[in-house]
Amino acid sequence: MARRIARFYDPRMDASLEPMTGPKRRATYDDVLAAPEHKVAEILDGDLFLSPRPAFPHARATLRLGAMLDAFDEESGTPARPGGWLFLFEPELHFADDVVVPDLAGWRRDRVPRIPNVPWHGVAPDWVCETLSPSTARIDRTRKLAIYAREGVRHAWLVDPTAHTVEILSLVGGHWVVAGNHGGDDVVRADPFAAIEIPLARLWID
Image (tube, rainbow, N blue to C red):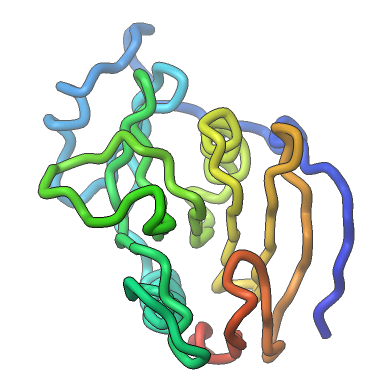
């Protein structure tokens, strides 16, 4: 069953993933452009990180969650389709010298009324989802959460397709507060999408 807790989440509690080895210099966008096509390239605090493409359980959970949240991807709303949001899958986001690629990101339409025709976006989303995998979980929980907090992203979900859990985080006073932990076959209503029920069992591959 779901349980709600209220505590501050400090990203420093997790050891950070080591960046690529090599000469110590600040990575640039040229490094991102030169990355192999089968890797996801990100620049976090001046370090270049290359992550493998996700395994099937990761891809399935992200796809299914995005499909359920499509009810919000409308200009106006109804009880069944509340609307008011724009979503992107693996958008490339630029914040100062950082380049981050969340698995899913959403913007409220009153802030971003339409999707720009650009290769990357510099406006921080209102919500991000990171689908955790063994190779990326530590970096998602540490460096990336810290960047999202700095940029004022108000909501973050951490989906773990191996443990079958979803962790709901809200930004309060510049710190991440764990607002809820859910898992298994829970049916969830969680901010900022509490207007609909999300059956978590649909996210997992047995």
